[in-house]
Amino acid sequence: MSEQLIIPAIDKAEEAEKALESARLAHQRYLIKQQQEDIDRAILFYVDAIKYNPKLAEAYYRLASLMWEKGQISLESAIEQCKTAITLEPENVNAHIYTGYFYSLAEDYENAEKEFKFAITSHNINSARPRLFLSKLIQKRMQQKGKTFSGMMKFLYYFLTGSILFMSDYPALKMVYESMADNFSVFSYKTIGATLEKIRMFPTAFNTYAIGMERTQHGDIFYKKLGDLSLECNDVVSSLEYYRNALKTTPKNREVLIKLATIMQTYFPEEIDTIIDYYNQLLEFGIDNGKIYYELGHLYLRRNDKVNSISAFKLALNEDSENPYYNNSLAYSLVRAELYDDAIEYYQKAIKLNPDAAWTSIVCHALGALYGEVKGNFEAAEATFQAGLVLDPNNYDLLMSLGDLFMAVGNLDKAIRTYCDGITMNPDNFLAYAKAGLALWEKDYIEEALVSLHKAVDLNPDFDVAHNNLGVVYLDGIGDAEEAITHFLRAIEINPNYTLAYFNTGRAYQAMNEKTSSAEYYQMALDLNKITFEMDEDDILARLHGLFE
Image (cartoon, rainbow, N blue to C red; front, side):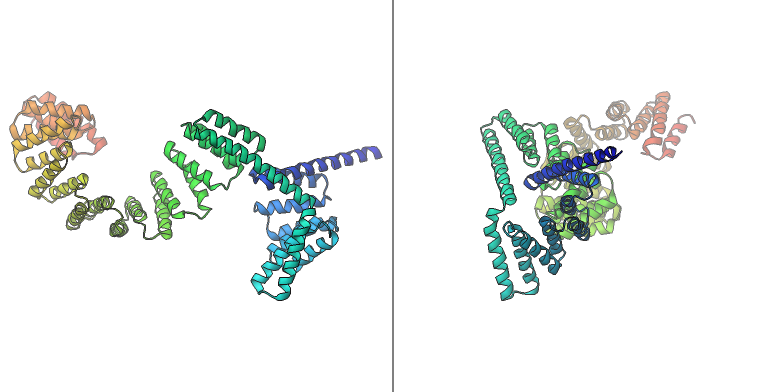
């Protein structure tokens, strides 16, 4: 019976030692390589060691240090765990050093000093670490409470004796040696790989980094190198995989996060949520947050998340209130949210800042459109468009919008002149010809309208609106219904959902007294209008019913 009780106890002790040794190795790797997987593994092994043997003092204070570093416990909890270790082994020097360290972080200088002095007196020859810790504690206390002569003497004494004794501190020297050997190995593989990259021997460089990864286990360095090289060779998918592995190894690697966010945004723009997550992680570093909020704002806009887009752009402005691009983007997001008065304010500020004449001209275009189309303030719209053209006289789109504004207020002469200026500015662009043709038609300049509209369809045979308008001029201006039908049908061919073109085809057939064909197109216009809402349904019905009265 006694043997059956002893055997499990021995098994547990062995398992505890195994877990503790595994924890030490993982802990040591973490201290050298600073990789996330090592600290996670070390924590799990220390916990296992305590489960198997709750009296292992070492496991308590080392576990406390790692859990505090990961933010899993508070300073108070870390101190309590170290006290548990001291209770289990009152003479354990390391337990007192760790306890003193945490007291120091908690600014409990008196208890911290007691712990370090106990470690020094208990292990006088190998007391380099507690002496150096105590010297740092004294320095920190003097920074807060003021320097004293006795304090300076104590600091120098413990610092100098700690530095001298460090040469006889075997555990510390061993760690330094292993760290130096690790650094040299990493340096060698990085240097060879970089040299091979420079001479364009990419496959060999790739193999060098892969071997370096395998032998040094420095995923933070070599996964990134493999990702960079894959990206250089246009293997985007592989580069993403390597960067993700690098991020798993070191989750707080800002450079890798930037790479991932940039690649995803460039090559996989549909993965909006993933990209947003990377940018949110970058915010934790507190570096270039204005730019990050700016990118987030645009991502939220693409997701049609108006509230978060406005919030992100406002946060960007909190970082840099005089940035014209941030002001412009906030204005645009406010327009999307139909907060027009607020949008005007930020558009005006962006224009006032005027970082670049051509860019500011585009902002003037947006603000002018807001004045004209939403606020109905045509004078403000014209003034803003004109200001934009002063900034950039070659802004073709802005010139077209100014012409459209003149059309909207019924000033056909100004509209025609503006569209003609557009033709002069860009004679190979169909849009100004098409718009000028419509304005000329409204002004009853029929021949001129035909010339302008024909030029538009010559430049762009697939412009459905120009074909429809050309058909209208032939039908209502020339009275040539047959030629008109040719253009109406071409408009329908280009755009099968063009309700007005079906209606106009019906009108043309009606003019030719072909009532069956006319009714057919009126009916198609009526059916399609239920989806497009392009016309007043009563107008279509009146035409359809009028055929048979």
